[in-house]
Amino acid sequence: MSPSKALPPHTSFESIRKQAKKLARDFAAGDPKTLDRVHTQLPVPKLPFTLRDAQLILAREYGFAGWLDLRTAVLRQEGKGLEWAVAEAERLIHQSDGHDNNVDQLVQLLREYPALLSWRGDSGESLLAFATESFGDSGDPFREQAFTRIACAEFLLDAGATVDDAIWKDAIRARAKGVLQLLSRKNILPRALETAAALGDDEAVRELLPAADLPATTKAFLTACGFNNRTAAALLLDRCIELDPSLGKRVANLHGPTEFIAYLVEHPQRSENPWRTVVLNELYDAMHRRDLEVFNRWLEREPNLRDNLQPLVEIIQVASYTDRGPFITRVLEFAPAIKETRPSSSAVGFALEYGNAHLIPLLAPIWPVPDDLPHAAGIGDLARVKAWFDEAGQPKLGSLSRHHPTNNPSTLRNLHWIPANAQHVLDTALAWACMNANFEIAEFLLERGANIDTDWSTHEPASILHEVAIRGKYETAQFLIDHGIDLTICDYRWNGTARGWAIHASAVGQPPIGDTKMAELLAKAERDRQP
Image (cartoon, rainbow, N blue to C red; front, side, top):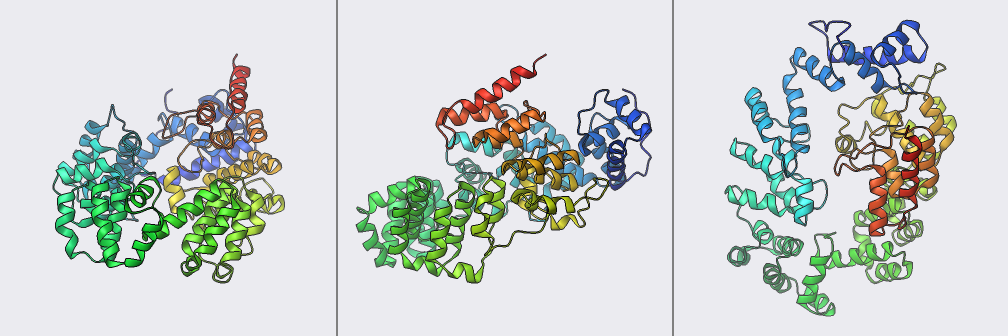
């Protein structure tokens, strides 16, 4: 369709954002001219009409296929070419896979924007970090291929990208063996006990070991276990016991060095102390099995856990999103200092994000619920939700920085919601209302511009229905279906629909599903929608 207007030569990105917001408001108000504009570009607009719809209409009016294309053109025009180029490079890298790594396009982009190689974000991120970082654990080749982009990383290294220490440290943390091997092949991995342990270089371990102190040796030992390099781990454990005889007694009680190493190979590393790692893993395992008796037994035998509250706070956080209320109560009884010192925690947000609002009474006396729209929606406070809108039904959020997720950089980055806007706040509020079955609030938000087809998720872009499907929330799934959610939305990482997630969960017996009912519900919804 030909453009209905030309893009002015000095238009700013902020200007077109305001134009899109005004178009959405005018459409909601029933303005006749705006209705004509919308129907010209989108003959059958889906209701409720959202800001994203308005952005699409505006982009088409200016002759662009979509909002991203319009945004790119305006940013170039504004002289913000590098900002666009960074976003484009990140897109190319993340959308790469084992068959097409988009390297050719990345080559062309770097020719146009050579400053990309030295670009650093506000948190120190770089293009090389985009290619090497792992969203999750990469301890097996399949997961590493899913999370990292080795071909892009190799190209960037050959092009002259600088390797910060954070690159290889993150690779060790994520157990990304391929990244470490790439850095080693390029002769840019520092020669240190920890890197030798990660690579399984036994000769280097033997050479470096005599000069290492206990903290360095312990760290390298845990690294060797994490990468299943058992010969290096045995060398390092002998040195750890030599420097700390008390560890030797604990190892003996756990059936000796071989069994101790095998245990640490098979379990996550939850501490920089080997024995503390064993204790924490046993606590998490007992919590996973809902065995409060064993959980309490490990707490009582390790009173020194009270010396460092952070691991206990992290247990509470995990209990908040896995719905383990009795274990939260027990940890707070065991370590009352948590109530007194109130260390930083994401427990309240996790509880609401994963649909466990019933845990809020346990958590709120220590970590008060923030006063913003998503939290009000999550806990079911309809009066407070209504207070965030004016009489015309438009959001009156004030400073966006007071609302989740615009004040949570890690969430924004995971969802690719940068820069954040008011729509993200509305969509998160809708998601939290749905996850906690606050359907009256969800209806209210949908009527006021929240997007039922948002790509919100607990980790990476997907949809509310994906999260509902894998958690067996049948009532919420039906609510979303009845309100017309797009059943074909695919998640960012695996390109799977919500029904695909449900099928996977039932195939592996993942709690709380373990059956095929959710997949059948979604399949029926798909059939019912067929012409």
